[in-house]
Length: 84
Image (tube, rainbow, N blue to C red; front, top):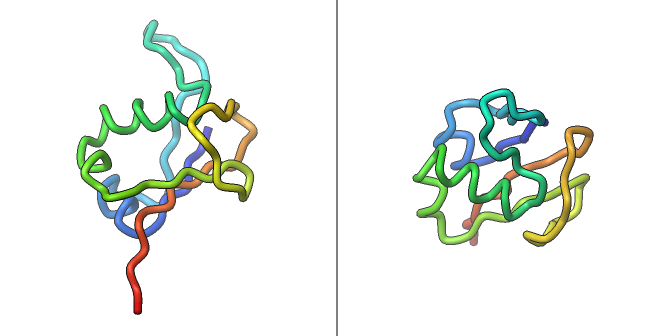
């Protein structure tokens, strides 16, 4: 699955997109919900855990941690936005 990155998330990961495996070849758990994806990314990129908020959108809609995800979904990390 491909995750689209914006703002500071792009800086933390170092790319505008991130590919997440949808099948486990190594025996590691593959994220199946938004919450599992959040934990998976937090382990790979601990700086994401330090953000004041991090929304995850699935198919152009903000998603709660219980939302199931699959390889066909469009997923985006939406960092906190500042402005005035």
